[in-house]
Picture: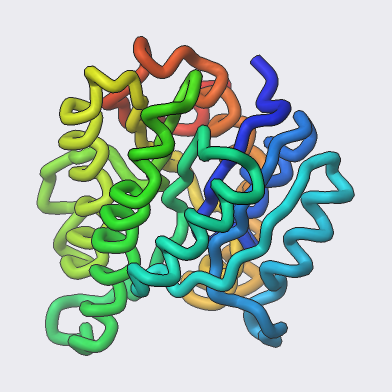
Length: 247
């Protein structure tokens, strides 16, 4: 299935996995709404919504860069309105924006705790809430959250309780909304990598250049996401996919 003419609303699409998913869809001729916060260049975080828009257009898609702080309901609603006004609707929502702080309970500042929960769990919920009315009108609507399987083993929580809670909040949105909107034919799924992916977060927070060398390209996540979007939404919902299982 091609994504030609489909409109994707992707949070955090100015770089990394979000941008990779956008570029893969752009090669089909899709419309991409870049909902991200970075409007000005940052030496530690390459890419802005405008540089991403240029890449998307070069790849064959149409781009709509929107300055969106995922913590702001008003900015999300404004971006959704712009998307609908520009492209006529929304076919796919990708909840990719995420905050990470891998620390133990005693080492986690509440400021970081709040940031992770506001962006990861709350951001996913409010973006889904804003897009669902338009997804109901789409021919093959999908919501894809970049979040892990709900594996309730202590080993996934103990090293970084706050972060795992915030990411599992995104996964719980999949579990609940897949059933809530099953009758509307909207697919809610999650995608998670089996290994580290070479992104700015890995370089800056998880080990620098050495960690990047041992990581795979974001393109594998983009290909996996594309494989999910190609499936009929009514027969594909409530799944927690690992990237390699789709390729």
